[in-house]
Length: 440
Image (cartoon, rainbow, N blue to C red; front, top):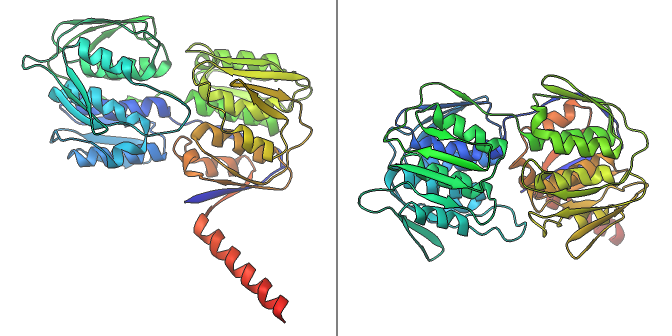
């Protein structure tokens, strides 16, 4: 276990370059096993989730090689095998192997996924989609057993009862090699869905409508990767650094951005009173003055992203007045709130609604990052705070933020990583010395 130590209160400036989208990458890597030739992904973020997914690939005899941000995956000698537990439990996106294995082999045994504890995230819509394609699905001993009929999966018309990014991706992965036509309605419209469809279409898939309410898939018997695929920039990482730039920046340029993916977030920033210039593939954020408190309500894309409600919270604490955050996607996503209170934030939760009031200053202290985006909020708060902030369980931040220490230091932040074991040992030494002095 590691911790992040931040000596806050120092204005940041300079440039930061956004990496490839985590939420695309964690779908593209499982999707790569649908190919019958080598796959190359460019712009891969250097995050823990990528390491975990590569370890799962290795278990299936799929080799992968990462050279800087270029990942080459060779699924040509893939072995169909159960993935009931172990590594599969380390991240939620591992459930994309359900659809990918079902599409490739017509069967899958995959453990129930892990990931952040941000409230209920059922997979009933995934199961509904698999069953509509003809598969039998059962849950045995905490693992999903999914089996296509002898004649293989067949096209179907599927209507999701609720918009789900995960279910949309999983059903695409299963249907892309099914016989016939699949029409999926009430689907997620996130840019990461479009990125996945582009990747698969370049391998010979026939997917239309990605980015709209309805996706139409004509099944094909084979997929072959012919060209490298460049992953879209991470809009959540971008929003996090934009929030940071507005909260404690002295002029920061955030590079490698597709601004259209951030329309709802940028509109909210403008409403708060943040001034910025949108360029072709970058955004410059000016030092902030007076800010206005607002209400943030998360919604499915193109609405305000649930993954950005926590990173924008420290910025809101600087604003005058009272505001609130209503997360309609994951109402229980409030584990950062008590940690911010420990730092002096005037913030509470009532009936799953986060209530914010202007906070004059934050004070550094020991806090815990219980999930990725909560960690991002604490990281920004630590940079704003007076004194030293120590963030424990920093592995959760590393799961989703590419080379975060390097990027923060390049902006002028005084931040470092340390082993938790070292801190415990040091504490014991200090206590021993104190005891010895007292005895003398």
